[in-house]
Amino acid sequence: MAKNIFLELELFLDPPIKEAGAMREHLEKEKIPFWNNNQTTSPQYKNFVAKAKSYIADNFPSLEQQGDESRVTKLDELKKQAKKIIEIGATERHVKNLVNDFKKFFREDTIKKLVPLGSSSSNQSNDEFVIPDCPDSLKCGKPVAYADMLKISRDLDGATDGECDSMYKLLKVNERAETKDILTQATKKSKDIHNMPKTDIKADPLNRLSAKFMLFFKNDDERKNYDVALKRFPFDKEANTTLTLYVDGWLAKKKTDWKQYHGCIDEVKKLGYTQEEAAYLVYEYFCITRKCPLPAKTKKGTGWGKHEKLHSHLVFLFKESIEYHKSSNPRIKNKLQSVIEQFNEIADPDSVENTLKVLMDDLRNFWDSCKYDGIVSNPLFRPTALANFPFDKLRNFLQSFTH
Image (cartoon, rainbow, N blue to C red; front, side, top):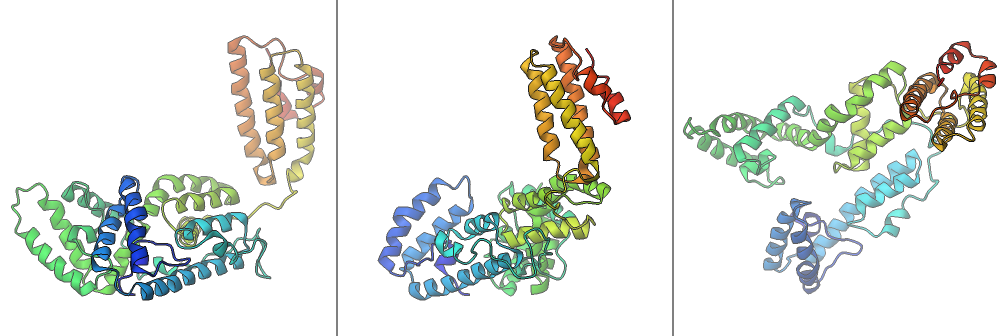
């Protein structure tokens, strides 16, 4: 699509402003002041201001046509994403994310009526994991490797004093320009770099960048590989610093935690990705690259499973001990009640042993701090109740909680 003021400036489309005078007033009185006041939080707003002033100077050619075309384009994107959500099974979280993705273009009720809560395909359930499709924005032959993108990022930072974070900005070209036109500018820039004095501290990083951009813009395929890598770059940084922390635990347990996995998708969305992009990137990283099992939601009601007898005896022991400490420091009773509540929150039988270990280690630290503070007058557990606790190994451990 040719230049379009609505898409370039991310203007509202429900309905779009099609009259030149009204658009001028909207930009001058509402949008430009807002963009000027928020450039520190969104650097793109500086570019928005410049583009808006250019459109004002040109008196908005083809405004009505651009409004119609942009609304069709964005509505198609919205409907495609809504359809995917319905296939998965619409939830409140899905609807909220969809509204956040498109609220700059459409009214909330326009968005919500496309994804009525409870709608789902006949062969899917909200409890089932659906392998996401790779969105078009992430498709290419082979994206530039993350390690190479890191080197490019460092060279861009050093060569431009932090002013440029992409080859497009270094070459001062529009990201929507034709590849052949960018290559012409790249060739000129490469010659200028080659003629730089070798003593210039920026010569080395610029020469390395020159070799890269002459490759990236030699044809559309190579450019697409760079474009996708550039889009993925914030995610790849997140994956190598934060998401990687989940991998060892999930591989060791041979189980990918459903709640944590979807929490990762929510965090990735905050980097600026759509729901579709975030879902695919997280799936690709964990399940394809790192070989984690597909996430599976624990069936409601399974609780402690084969450990249910242990659950019952632990709750009884802790309740007896709360009564035992009724005249003690409330700090002790509150801690015991808190542990009971955490027992009752366990919903996955496979996690019982690991969760118990964590809870007991925490309880040990708590009891040690109570002794240090001098508030201990009795054992933590009622002795008669503990004596009848039928799990020998755990009973022996709990007997160590004495004063």
